[in-house]
Image 1: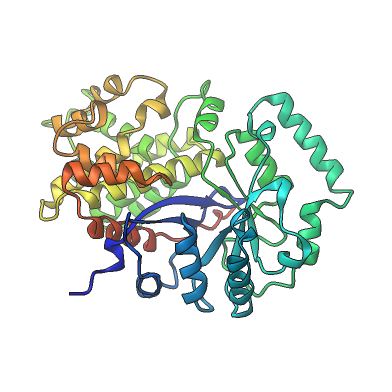
Image 2: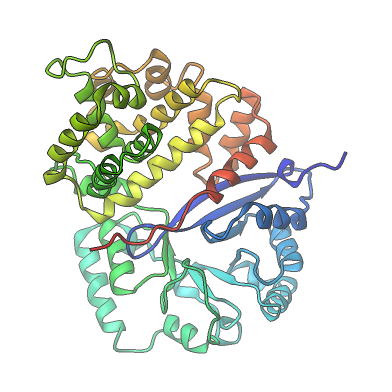
Length: 430
């Protein structure tokens, strides 16, 4: 029996965010298993078969020279974007493969520090760059951010090495939404102010990862509020008399709205019989009219802060992965419970209070509480694996596979299926 390439690789992912602070694509980390040579051509076929026309653009991020060379040799025009590390380009064999891959029409992304972009000879081989900013730019200090802004304004008036890279590049064909016209991609940004600078002043094509800690720190003096977009979407669904399943799906996109909903449905003032321990049960018991009135009460103070959109979206991705990673064959009710675990597992960061305190206000099951708070119980492995898959470090993923008998191929298929079902998110209409 031929071994699947998905048994030869450890995969991880990182979202890419556009100027609207919405999903632009995904970066897929590729680690070969020790002592195994992965069939990269098979991986490319799997991606072609799995990805639909509505799936997000993918940036393949090989973590070894061997995988990079195999991608450059086997990928054809129309394949996902391929990252090439700047220091690896010094290898003459990789240099030649990059030149040949560009000639075949591959979309290549140069990755490295802003201070060391490729020379003009190699620049036109790359459709974009994934750039590290210097350490002083990513510190998050207000005075350093102000200095960076001043320097950016000055740089706009004078040629820079990065501008030379752009000028040397050949006109690119029509590209997927992963890249905005004239912008590069940036990573390693720990400061929200610097992220805003890259997106709004440099018109970055995408930001890889998001400065979650700094975003939440900036909101620390404001109450945690549900997304206005989600509240409006649920109100429209109620007006259209859509199904309970549609309501549950929309409600489950926002951890704060879901948490407030469970607080409301379990409040003494509402007087519903029994504990409402799931979103679906609350929706069934509440009724359309009461739900619409409650949503109307949420709307005037709902959140419109764009920088929180990546935070909420990343939480939703974790919840979706957690649900999918749980042992197959459990009931739909338990699957929804596992999704709720993933959705509420970061309430402490959003609310600014201990997670046990927040969860004790609502009647979540002991299984959810244990997994979220102490990382124990039957649901904990799925949550821990979902968290581990958000990184470029394969060690925690491999350790969890060994400790909890996850099959490597199953985990990889679940991850690829989840990512392929995402959609690039346009900015909401004004």
